[in-house]
Image 1 (cartoon, rainbow, N blue to C red):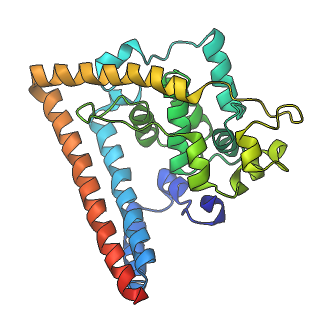
Image 2: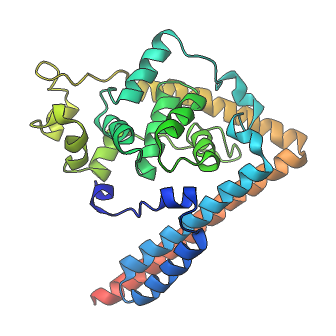
Length: 293
């Protein structure tokens, strides 16, 4: 995976502990982007990096004004689904398998083992592991957020807990969709050669990715089979979350008020962000085509 080859900055612990400021990183990145303006891909990547710095500070600001969102659901409709109550039985077994990197989903397990060893994983893997726990395993974000904070060397309450609510589908209910990551699809997209998986799951070394996908290792390896049916749990639990989002949306639209205004502002912010990203990507593609002529 590219994050193992230096494609991520690993500056997040320094931002968390204040050993470097957002302003310093932002200004340094601007200077570097100017130096690389003849290289469209590098310039585009640095712009994306600066966007992440803006989001970083927006999370801090949100927690300052709404400290309760670190521990309570953003919308009360989700109180019936996501609670910090102690897990028992099958849910506890699923949670422990997730914690230990023994779910039978290689990309999830490699990421969770990296977290335990390094105290870090890149953003996409954090999000993927979060949706797997909340949507597929049906376990509250409270438990996953606490586990991350126990291990992350860049653990930031403002970012971590809000992101967990986001990945659990409990925020931005005025949007018609929410994302559920597919761990198998992400292998092809993010780890097509299996380098990341083989590094963190030695039990699977010697097996091809196709053999791993077909669980050919079951009889000859200590690595477990998949602990759940991803497609089935996505459909069943995803509908539960989707229905709660619809209930929240209906309530906000009917009652109006500050909560509705806040939800509208959040929806517009996200939409404008993606419009901006689409525009930047088109500009990048144009510059790239010019340099290749």
